[in-house]
Length: 141
Length: 245
Image 1 (cartoon, rainbow over the protein chains, first blue to last red):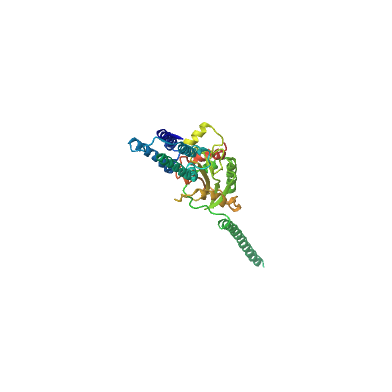
Image 2: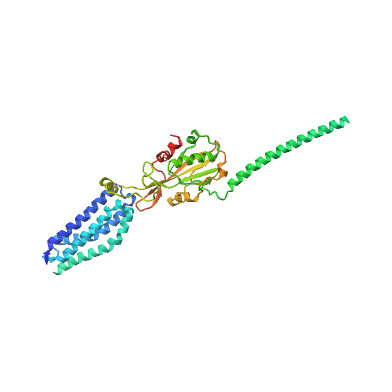
């Protein structure tokens, strides 16, 4: 079953910008209010590699479309779209949890961020692979 | 014959005087010898560990000598002072203490405790090394914990009792070293120290070592904390009890 390429791209973009923006806003307020103290660089050093690579990929695709050099396709396989969307949603949810669960954790915020690399690292690989497959498979379709 | 007896009497009288003088001298020497032996035992006691001297740099300090002297209790010996301090510390919650020797006196170390920014003990979690986590959900507390830092403040109080003036060294003590003071000292003041007279030369100085736990789980000594020594001792309740209020 097929889904509109434009629609699927935008849904993914909205999901990633919303999720990343939500976490960014919380961390921004935390930094301004001194939540991380002198360890702010450690906190942002965790956030940026967690979000930016995938966000950069999505922005790149959107920019390419905007300048007319994007893929000239109409539809993509719904399965790959759903896979990519679900994995992205779950990934962003887990990233958000790492921030939102700080008050309940016996670990300090920076410690928790460091620990989260154990599960976010492989997860990010899955998300990148699925998005890559989505865009490439979609192009082949 | 009468003159002979007179001479004999005079000789005996002189001898008696000499004997009495010798006895007095012997008694004085014995007393001095006992005192020397007493001091010698104190100085060479291998079981009384020494506190780092001069003491490491503290975050704050306070001279409590006059407060102690103004109390209604008579303090003659260091043992009396120790008893007064133990009572005040026990009443303030400092049930674990440790003793070290310092030149001419002793140091009394309290256990590492977690405190609030105003110097009052954290409750609950005063004696815990871990920071408080939310055990139940309250939106206000949750938002506060999410957006505002709780650096985790800890302190150790060391009371230095000595007639010798001292300064603080440049050495910056680590939190683990300060924690080690509690287990490294004696659990009670040696009798030889207790029997030492508390003279006017003695000064009692409270050194407060305040540590801050950072997000990266490092603990660092605050070289000049926002709280004064008086703030710390008042916040712990020790000052009130010492003053008899």
